[in-house]
Image 1 (cartoon, rainbow, N blue to C red):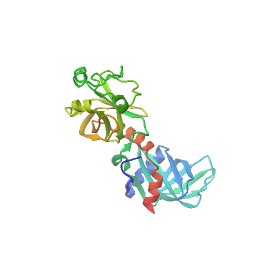
Image 2 (cartoon, rainbow, N blue to C red):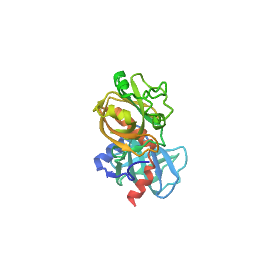
Image 3 (cartoon, one colour):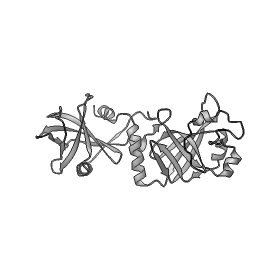
Image 4 (cartoon, rainbow, N blue to C red):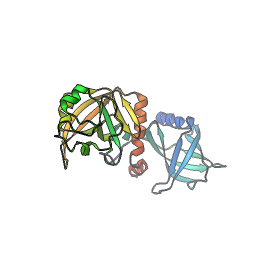
Length: 270
């Protein structure tokens, strides 16, 4: 589920298209083929690319049902999804030729879409707070699961009772939504007083299927949330200093949890 409902697709020029198809072939990446409106999707391995005629040569363990048909195809490079239209021709011995001379599009979703992680995904963030900050703000002690003030008796319900392993000097909060450029997480009234005074946090650790270290987090806003019990706030934050590899890896994790890109591409080209 996402805050936005649609991706948008950018048409690649011939040079860009040639580059991406060559990358797919050289890395022997997987390619998905299907017919518009059909739920059956077939997987192929890429073996060779003809730069002159824009032919992509494929192989498969099974006989394709899309031979000599106009099809749609998709592949992913470093977490970015690409989609095209083409025609699949049979060669022999489960080898095929895909005519890719038609348009190729890049999905812009990974930079512009934010995945809502709660309640469908188990995701959290650990942020560094010193002992002085914890004591002065009376933040709940995760090890004892007791609030130091008693004013926040619903705190464990808000942040989730399954606190798991927490790094020394860090406090853990539930992530509400996540993108490659930032996230939002949930805090309580007492935490708000401390975090309002903090502009940046470094480093932080985000868990989404696996733990990812983010060099620096910039606090952008704190807004109240409607809560049945207790007081809660949504903190919006931006990632800073994230390197290319981490950016690409996080994009892959988010894209894997997104809704079906293929159906959106079908809607786009209708």
